[in-house]
Length: 413
Image (cartoon, rainbow, N blue to C red):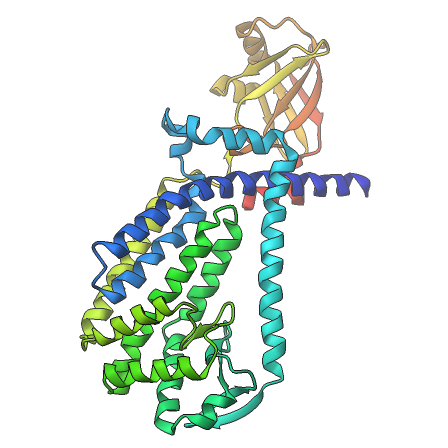
């Protein structure tokens, strides 16, 4: 029992080291990736609302950059990043501190969403313009919330003061958020912000991301409604006058920005609305998804495998001296193993001992094991060999560590 508990604790420590190394690198890489996204949206895509919003998809690749082989293949890269590897491996507070930061951020995010869900359960259900909505007593902006079963919340004040066609426009805006997948995009942004929590700049960029989603939704809503930009902008101003300019965390709202400058810029972009070709936008989306898939595929092809099986062996005598036996055909013939026994061929082993100038007749052999990252791995099997006899073939029973469930989990992740 205690041995199993110890293996489980070792697994947790290995997982903590493994993920803190990778995510720490991703944090460092997230800064230039964010800079690239901001440059693209303010430069080449500034006049194209849909492309400006789609470019944020590049950031979803960041959590997968931690295992890129370039961290080890390029001579100049280790000087920039290997210090983080060493720090996580030798300093337990650093690696546990990073994981604790993830847990705290996730707890705060979950707490906010649970409070919102609890509050929404007490809202009145009502049909407006043929759409079931939740009615809030607070003078907060209408919003949509829910990852799988999204619901729309509308304040009672707005229901009482707005005409039916105005409410229909607002509900259409929220339905467009749901249909376009904006709620899932915001959830993904929250997940990335949790995983990469040391980069506080992501929180500021999330506000910009929300604005780009609102711009896309404004464009789609105006076209789908068949109305004009002037009436839509007037409705936005009217909403801001009636309601508090505050949106709930993790929701997509019709009018949720806090600063007047943001509202003015949003209305200015609404006034620049021009009808768009749906087929052209679908083509943009298809090309964007193809580019993103290509980026993911490139990252995958240039990343390290899940683990690398170690084929070298270590021979150690009772005095603590050891020799690293490099993998070769003769070594594999000298030492082989199945799930229960290690077999040593004396003729081949004599050649190995002669090659490495080893005269010991009692020694231990460490074989097997794996590397998750260069310099980070574990396990392996150790057997004690009494080589003083004359048997042509030695068979030594052992317990194969690869059969441990903890080893299987770490190798699979």
